[in-house]
Length: 72
Length: 258
Image 1 (spheres, rainbow over the protein chains, first blue to last red):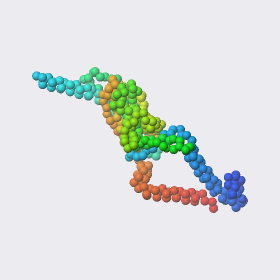
Image 2: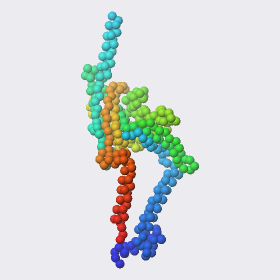
Image 3: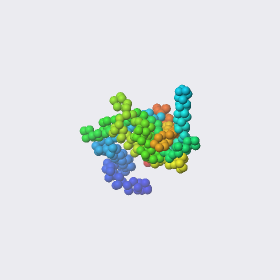
Image 4: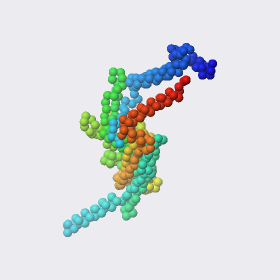
């Protein structure tokens, strides 16, 4: 067993908690990829929640400004 | 005889008026006429300094003086929007468009404006943010609206962004006739031409004024990117997309697991 394989097996239980389908001997190389997909999903979900929160929660200032042109 | 007397009176009054108008001469200058925005630009401070030249032949007016300097940035139309709750969610429901208000406005004075001159002069000379014209577009009409919540909100937001400011004690007199003040330009200041109008007051009346100017420009790679995006939009889009693809490919090569 080389060092890289030992490292993969060492981190496999921790990673498989977020991605159970990727567990097992054949899925060990795919662990990091599914972990990245999980992170991407969390990122998209957090952005969606943020937008949803902005729509539902009362804003600190109901006024906002936007430049619509004129500057050089 | 009457015509001679009338002519004499007119000439005398003209001499007196000219003498009063030329009693003080205001000279002002900036430490820098051009501000360059580079990649490490985080704001800058300019020093405005000047002097009052008094007419030695007119001992009646000898101060003390007051200075009001108004720095006005480039003009751009800005829309102020107001959110309201509709069917449980907060959405923009109303808006007002301000036609070409200054994108930067700083009023620097030696004392509070109320102490320098009266309300009529402040209104007539457009001293201070409260008397700065901010015309609005309302139903295809352009006009000033007093006590408008949109105007108040616009000024408040610009103040929070440090783009509008009114400093009542920002101008200091080093001697009775020599003054200086600092113009603070924040990091988010817009590029363009800026004018500095300096007014000299004595006894509540404006006795002299002068103008100066400076410009804020982007230089170097930042200016190249701005010009490329504006002048060659299609090429700029392709270049950025290509850079994104190259970055992804390089990352995939670097982190490849063989």
